[in-house]
Image 1: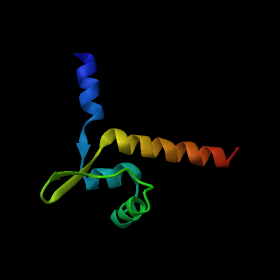
Image 2: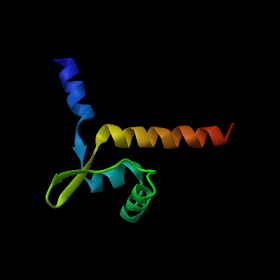
Image 3: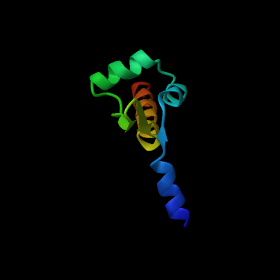
Image 4: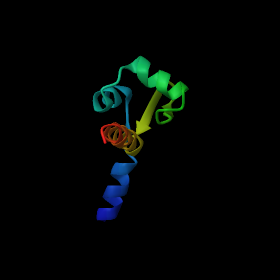
Length: 73
């Protein structure tokens, strides 16, 4: 049961406003990075709505933190 809940959390879809809040990036920056394949790909959740897997956004943030720490060593 606990693994099911953890799996569900990693599969949670979040919308752009939450992605902006989590990453600190503006909408235009997110789409620019997506175009350059440097940001997680969005998924279509309805005809007019997209979202991102929370796990993908978390991984993106962790990568950015890791990259920024390497530069200081």
